[in-house]
Length: 395
Image (cartoon, rainbow, N blue to C red; front, side, top):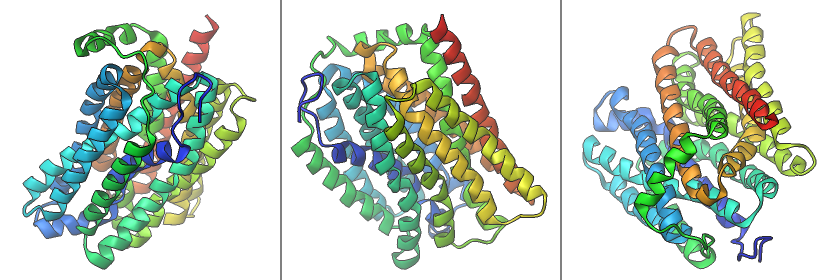
């Protein structure tokens, strides 16, 4: 298919799966973390590096992936990322000690190229309003990945052991390499001259208030999601005594809301201004958890009520993130890949901080309140950022 910009457009399913595999690499094995700690005979804090360390590595890689794709093209960088992820996944399956496992787990971070560059491909082939619509459609379908990922991971862990998750990753990576090779034509037809020139473009983005406003919106939005990931297992197991399979279903609740939000974005983009969708999303994600806190304080203290708060955050993110991602890449379309990588790196670093903070604070009998409070606080930061964007765009 030829897009409005005259480029051969990859199939929508390819872009969906490139994003989905990046999400699955983070959350599918989460229900098996305790099992992994027991297998390697290490503490939960050590094995949690598989999450926190992976996020830091993914963040750093995005700083490189964006400029590399602006220089060499989207296709070769995506193919390299899928190949590295596949080999590293096989290594994780066979790892004999925790340190080898963690080293190979960090290499799995190369899969983040799928998420970063699928967004850049959309920006290559579509103008901003159409890009927001496409990103919303991609988000609707790919939200099934984080919804089903923990459920699948919990089942694999209970049935075949935690290592089954990583052989599943290897199979997914190999299939995505083959699909990308077949379907993903190059969409960056104006490559930059040099890698260092791309890094010199970062100050240009740093000087843009609009870029920073969108980044803060992304940090606040994604921070609520990562706060949930960092605390859901701790609260679910410690406070409510959930099994890995039950926990997998609970973790998937935020993705159910995200899928609904993305569906609404795909339907409403083009008819409702992007900024208004972002505002609606931030209001849902900020005040939804606060309402749930009040309900729990009145006596409805159970895990189903707590996970209902996560649905509001997921819904808000589904309304906000497609427009925010399209907006941050439209600050300077010539630097779409760099903007996607840089904003993604900043966002994941913020998410890593939210995960660490939740893990440190959400233990104990008040853990559910702390978890929802941190999710609301992070989402509130995103709400303030949307108001800042509105002010800047009126100038």
